[in-house]
Length: 407
Image (cartoon, rainbow, N blue to C red; front, side):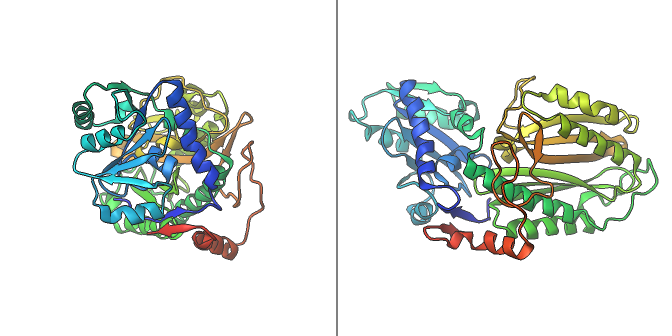
């Protein structure tokens, strides 16, 4: 269940940009002769719906029905008592509640121009739909052609707008600061090659690190945060943080207590090499080749890998989507570059940063970034503010004229 801050603020994302997102999808529907498209979301993966409307599916599941022309309608199994809240924090004006998506979709179809005569129903990002919901829709819309469509909304999300780049810069700064704080003041590594401590990630150290991240990230107004800790070798602990800020995601991972650890130093060198290789056109193999000399110095028996996950897939860590081998990095995209390793004795360690991809290279978002927007080349457009100015800006933004927020 999501339990963070939901904000709809025209000072962050202009009203016209929200409208354009829906218009771009509707233009594609018209081109592909799709009368009504449905976008599915649940608490685990609902970023397409959030991108189009700012709706937060904090619990249960929902479907956004987008006609080729006209206003979208959000279909939900939640009771009408949540409609005022949904309208307050989203661009949606039409919401329908019911027990079954099939019946709700049939009603939405009946309201289309032409009186709901059978046409073409498109399921956006069809492979992610639950089979039971698809069967229910087919049964409720006899005579309709049901087309399984690609991830059209995700394609729109792949290159962040100027407004989104500004939000990503702020998100990266907060998550980077939080994960750095979580690994500060750790004791130096122990004897090289010693097994992982029995306490593992549930010990007091792990709980304290999670609490530090939660305090800093949620305190900055994030909608969601996921924190994982694990032990490597020699008392070194790994802290991984994934955060959702508005409708965008960033990820970072650091090592605590790594001073004096040879294997941790090798992992760090591999991560730096992978980041240096991350540029427009590079693929997993390029990042792997750059990092391999350092990874070869890890303890015998280690299993290390290098990869990247687009921020559009960070809600699930990239597990919901199989990316074809050799997929190149795209200029303008934001991705998390990770080097991780399974270590002898059952240990695990990872280093990661979210970066903005350019033709010249990767611009880290989760390392010592100043606030303000990122330019088209990934550079920061404003100097750093002091901490008091930054805190005031992040906590008071929702109170700007026309801004709406809720928690």
